Amino acid sequence: MALLLLLLLAIPALCAPQTLTPQHTTTPPQHWTPLSRAPPSHPLQLQIILHQPNISLLHSRLLAVSDPLHEEYGQHLTKSEVDDLAAPGEESVRAVEGWLRDAGLSHRAQRTRGGISLLLPVSEADPLLGAEYTLFQHLHTREGIARTLSYSLPPALHAHIRAIQPTTIFARPLAMHSPPRVRPLQVLANTLQTGDSDVTQPTCEPNVTPACLAQMYGTRGYTPAGDERLGITGYLGQNANLEDLQRFYQAFATDAQGSSFTTVLVNGGENNQTLSAAGTEANLDVQYSGALTFPLENIFYSTAGSPPFLPDPSEQENTNEPYAAWLEYMLGLEDQELPGVVSTSYGDDEQSVPEGYARAVCDQFAQLGARGVSLLFASGDAGVGPAENECYSNSDGRKMFVPDFPASCPWVTSVGATTGDPEIAASFSGGGFSNYFPRQEWQDSAVEAYLSTLNGSYAGMYNSSGRAYPDVSAQGQNYVVYVSGQPGLVDGTSCSTPTFASIILLLNDALQQQSKPRLGWLNPWLYGRGKAGVGDVSVGRNPGCGTAGFGAGRGWDPVTGLGTPRFGLLREVLGV
Ligand SMILES: *[C@@H]1O[C@H](CO)[C@@H](O)[C@H](O)[C@H]1NC(C)=O
Ligand SMILES: *[C@@H]1O[C@H](CO)[C@@H](O)[C@H](O)[C@H]1NC(C)=O
Ligand SMILES: *[C@@H]1O[C@H](CO)[C@@H](O)[C@H](O)[C@H]1NC(C)=O
Ligand SMILES: *[C@@H]1O[C@H](CO)[C@@H](O)[C@H](O)[C@H]1NC(C)=O
Image (tube, rainbow, N blue to C red; front, side, top):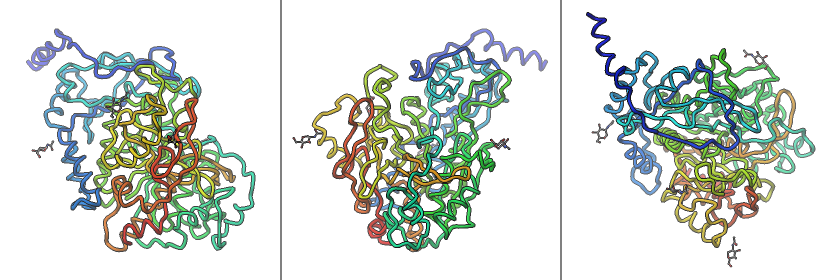
C-alpha cells in the first residue's frame, strides 16, 4: 500500500517533466575559456536565495537609523527585528520546498537565513536547473571553476527565487593588493626611525608604518578604553601568521607586543600557522589594524574556500561562493557578538556577479548595517578599469569602465587609496559608478558637483546615475609588512581599508566612552556631517581602460572619495 502511494505520488513528476524558463543567462565572461563539461560528480553547494517581501522596509529602517537628521538615528535594529524584515516569504519557502520534494531532493536541502542551501553533484544540478555546468579556466591565472552560462526554473518559481548561485557567477574574492608577494624593502631610513613609537614626527615617506599613519591621521596618543571589536575577513585560504605579527609589533608597535587577534574559523576555514604559508593579505590586515587599534580586540574571520581550482572527478571540495558562508555566519550571531566594524580587502568586477545575486548579497550587508555594523570594503586596484582591450560590457560589448563589487553596493563604505605627504591619489585607486545600484540621495549633491566638472568627458563609459565610489580613502602605498619572517612592502586599497576601518573603530570607542551608539552604516553621516572630519585630496588620477581615468578634485571624486580621515576633527563632529 505504502509503495503504491509512493508510486502514485511520483507519477505526475515522471509523466509531465516541467518546462523550465531561464532565470539568468550570461555570455561567456571575459578572461574565462570553456574547457569541457564539468565532471558529473563535482559537488555544488547551491544557495537558493528567496524573495524577501519586506526587504524595502529594511532599507528604509536602515536609512532612518543611519541618518543623523532622523529622529531614529543610532537606534540600530536588533537581530530579531532584522530577521523579521529580511525573512523569506512563507509562500516562497513552501513553493521551493515543494519543488525540491517533487524532485526527490529534500534530503539534500537545508534552510538558511536567506533561503535554502542545496548540496548536489553536477549530474543532478544540470537537469534540475536546465543548466550545463562546464569547466572554465581563467586566461591569466589558470584558475578553474565549474559554472553554467544559464539556468532555468519552473515558471511558477521565478517570483519566489531571487538567485541561485554558484551557477552563472564568475567573480571570486580577489585580494586587493599588489604585488602578490611583498617586494623587498628599498629604504630603511624612516622605517627604522618610526620603529620607535616615541619618535616625535614619524613620516609616511618613503615607507608607511602604523606610527606614521597614527601621526598623519591624528590617532597618536589616543588610548582606547572600551570593548569595541574590529572584524577582519580572510578568504581563499589566506593565513594570518602569529609569529609575523609579533615581529611586526617588535619593529613597529612595541606597545602591542604580546597581544594578538582572535581567530574565528567560518564554515571549515583554517588559519595554518606554518610560517611559509602566511598570506600577504591576511598579514597586512591584522598587522595594521592590530597596531592601530591596540588594545581593542581584533577578530580574524577565516572563511573556507581555496582559490578556484580545476575540479577533477575525485575532488570532493566544492566551489562554494564564500561571501554567502561568511554572511550566513555573521547574520546568525547575537547582537552582543557582532563586531562594530568589519574590514574586507577583497572584491572583483561587478559584471562578473549576476545582478540578482549582487543585489541579494548587498541586502545581506544591509542587514549587518541595520544592526549597527560599519562595513568597509577596498575600492579595487585597477583605477577605472584594467587594460583597454578588457574594458567592455559582458552583456552588450560596448566600451566601458569596469566597476567593482562589493565596493559598488551602497550599503557598504568603499575605501580608495592615497600616497605621499601631502597626500595625492594613488594611481591604482579603484573608483567609478555602479551599473547595478542606483545612486542614493545622500550622495546626490557631492556626486553631481563632481560630474559637472567633467564637461561630458567619458560620456557613455560610466553610469552617471549609478552608486558612485569610493566614499573615502587612506594611504595605500609602500606599507611595510612582515610575511614569512621577512619585512617587505605592499601597495593597494587592501592597505587603505584596514587603516580606515581602524579609525572608525577608535571613533566607536570614543562614542562608547560617552554611552553613545556606534556609527553603524557610515554613508549618510559621512556625506553629511562627517565630511567635515576628512581631509580633501584633490590631486592625482586613476588611469585605466586606455584613458587617464578620473581626476581627483575639490570635494568628492571617484578616485579618493570625500578624502582621508582626521581623527580629531571626526571626534569634534561627533562631539566626543
Ligand atoms: C512583512 O510586513 C507585513 C506588514 O508589516 C507583516 O504583516 C508581514 O508579516 C511581514 N512579512 C514577513 C515575512 O515578515
Ligand atoms: C600548512 O601549510 C604547510 C605549508 O604550505 C603545509 O605543508 C601543511 O600541510 C599545512 N597544514 C595543514 C594542517 O593544512
Ligand atoms: C545605469 O544605472 C542605472 C541605475 O542603477 C540602471 O538602471 C541602468 O541599467 C544602468 N545602465 C547601464 C547601461 O548599465
Ligand atoms: C571643464 O571646463 C572647465 C571650464 O572651462 C575647465 O576649467 C575644466 O578643466 C574642464 N574639466 C575637464 C575635466 O575637462
